[in-house]
Length: 280
Image (tube, rainbow, N blue to C red; front, side, top):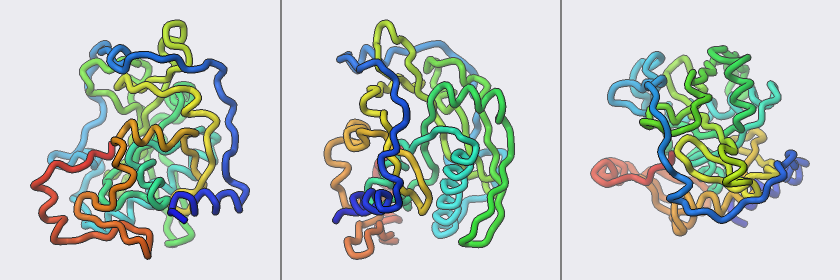
């Protein structure tokens, strides 16, 4: 049994799998990807990363974490995010590299320094109007910790065009201890009359309604999470046909016994000389 099949089976046994969320009514049409990715208006950059470190928030950065610290902080980051959003009644789902991590074993990819999630434009609007710049304390049972996180919404959230590309991220969930973050991007039906059933992020990446909804319920890093209905096709469109079958990434090799990516420190030192697989 593959790791993702075990995760779904585990979730099913826990009465968690395939919890249907009300789906929009439009069906997706067939449109050119180039046509769907036209550029939009410009805006000024809101989120700033630490100098030389693209995956830390500038205002909360206190130095690069070592490998083990970064992995531990990343797990806590996504767990707190998913549980807090569930408590607040906010719909969110795994995306990009975080969804790819789920595919392999229901965990964060050990080389992925930030998380990626998506929300609908209506959820983002609520966040902007009621939760912007709010801090959230989360108590972990294992390990026994109480940590604080910041939910920060980009004031350009309602500008739905890519513009100069500086505001593609709509919101962030930030660990105030170290600056690690989850990128939150929203999807919206921008042109329902022209492209019915097509949802876009600011990068003009199109998602079909039937590929997103109904969401599936699963387990990620030990807590419940949602994933798009057609998760496999979304991942293959994002990373390529062979990406989901690779067993070696960025200095890590897949161990079929432990169902984990294991760091090869010699390979890790060499990976900086190669172009890495982007997981965002």
